[in-house]
Length: 620
Image 1: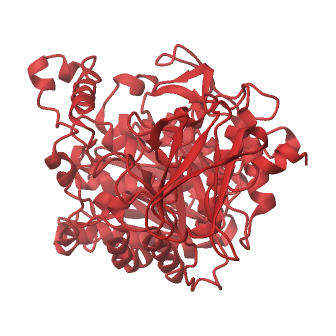
Image 2: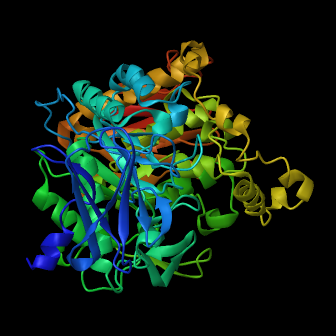
Image 3: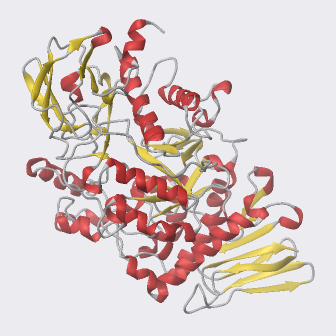
């Protein structure tokens, strides 16, 4: 490693030194003078001219500084600015940064990490997961998630953002856990407690753009943002241009920070299609290779990408020319099922028929688009996933995007009848892919999940206007007066309506849905047929306009899942079915149960649905 490279790879931000004091390190390659201002806490007040080092780095070692010191930077008489690598912003993203000690007393020493095969994921937003919306409050709910039977929770982004509440994708402080949810140590307590309950923890990170307010990185270096590439949210990060190696290093340090200092088991990478990199070694490939090589945990961290392109290259290991991402969000499953159940065909749903045969094709290979022309995108989409094991595809019926990007934040169970939702749930949790649940889905929460922000008034007005304009091409919202009824993202009530009401779980109609999820997740963990992770143990076919037969496993462990998404139907199975493992029309799941009949006739079995439902059978 050259001296310049070694200089750059020292930790950015404020680092507590073993022999006392703090080292402050910041990258300002076009600045002549950088001053460190200690504003409160140990060592303050003081103003120190930082020392220029190689590669545009400025460094200061302050013996009198310590944990809780608050500081900012002045750049060539401009500023004061918070640290781009701040570990905590106690007064918000525009305020002073705070030195943080990473001396948490971890109790998860026996934790051995999580494996992708057999994993189920539960996505949640800290601010709306509980009434108080804090890391500490989320800890109290962990026993509920353990008893539900999921394998890991996935936190929506927690990097600090402007205002009191936000989805997290307007984050500007990459290293600073959002102060409105609690302190960095309270986030560590959440991860530690989750591991104690046998739950892995994934973190959603945003490396494709910065939020519109409070992103000060461009003041420190003009090279953080690309001069060539743009995303739907503004300039892309500079991953392939002049000085891009420093930008890539910043992101690598951020990823390793969450994994090492907070014990996260992996990362969900937001909108990786907007990580534009025309260089010879794609950023995602380098990120994965470096994180696995430098990991301190017993198992390599999981990297899961959100990407609509259906690229085989992303999942292929680097030794076969791929990028080595562990899994991708495969939204084709959601879109096909949504179209079948609701009849929607506007926007990107215009690319999907919702036909049971297309749902079967999607389940049978991981995604639907494998190179066909997309009307919505106006170009070919996807690649052939043959041979990629099913666990590499993350599928869902709900996630923050598919619910929150609807005008009124309706969940799927708000749009269809309970029997159909039970059927779709069974299909999701019996499919061979990796299933993801969105918070509250497991009890059919009555609350929506809306789009909410808390920007300053002038920016907030633009956000509100833009939100309503997004829907003007949809037939239901062509009338301007109807669009005005779309909840204002800036209104406090929009955020409040999105907070889960945990008391619903005690109501009969909600507890029945919860019991169905528990039972299905238990079967998924414990039935060998549902645990099989190779395509040769999966067969799926359409058996009607809204009927699917999914077979999992081999021999004595073969499980047959028959799903009727809409209407009534009689389904003839190709083989004799044996024991009934579960029916969605059992009284414990359906308050108005209409039993699914299973009748043998000779060497075949007939399954008769009076309405939507699903049944799991063991092969005779």
